[in-house]
Length: 497
Figure 1 (cartoon, helix red, strand yellow):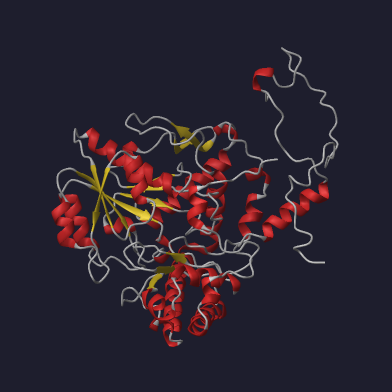
Figure 2: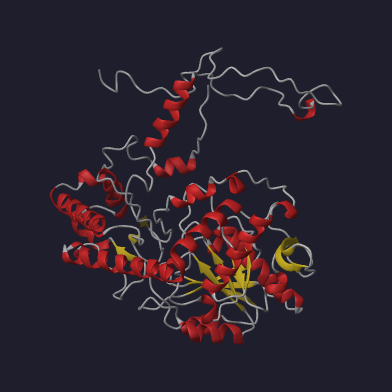
């Protein structure tokens, strides 16, 4: 028997009328007004189109689907600019505690003192890590944190009667910045990068007009390089009356070593699902808190967590809307609490010294992996885009590989799947032709990094003899190479049945 003779059917194809996974008792609760548990106006006109299958088939369906995904519990995930570190399992134990798992979002502050205290402590910890005194946990992810940062910028300028319409961002910015700028209603103007990978200061000076509201900067950049002219950039931006915004996507390289607030940034967003060991990928769960300087604080979203002393109850925590200049709410409830709670566990587990050690190890791993690739001769075909000591990630260019071996960056990425490795980020940042952006993080062992480097070297040797192997990869995954252009143009995410 072969898989071709007995192809796997979808769960919809296995559906048969009348089959159920469970037998539920008849509801004995009715509405006091209509005699119905759920009033008719809230009910579906037609039943949900769900498959009718047995319990074993449901379990097998989800188990089979899980095996078709790549995850951090299965292998190395060097996705550049995403910090795919392995999340500590301690967070699962923390979040399973009743006080976290059973907390209802409509719980009154008086009955959720422990949760509010925890969030207040998370804010204080992030304030210390960033060097900025005011923190808000509301943003649901990094992209919403970016949007919040630009809304704060707009409020800051509006309060001064200053109408500005331009936001600057360098070519090395984090990938979501341009979309956020457009969503916030600003015009995007890009700053060039010089031959060393730093922002071109002459181009910055030329474009820092009185219409510039903000400079959005990722530091280290998506090239994996620390911006060496940050002091000059800060002075130029502030002299022009603009705000300086820090994209925290790459904070994992500098935690406990240096702080955005000390660099002069006014606004920072943090990715708790990156630097602080929370789940990542698939659109969530995530969190993108923002930290700001004193001059931005009055515009932070409402409500805010406040702490005060009560003569009768002692220390009390509450949610306050007493901030007339606030930009308002970003979401219905006060932030992704579960992510904040697990991030708090991560911060307390490591402590200040541990956070610094995590960053130093992440930087060490990136530089070791780059050196290992060089030793194996890989950089002859995949040279580093910039000849500098990298931070937590680095960029290679596949141009020589494409010209000499006939395989592209995409081919290499697909072939890595056959070796059990998730590919690094490819074709980003855009200013590097045939780019591979590799971030090993601090949670990977030397042996894993060696195996990854050996796999790339073996793929290059293989391509020298027969490039079609990589050109037609992957060969071992449940789904072979897709027509990505067609997939983007003919988006089909449902099955007709």
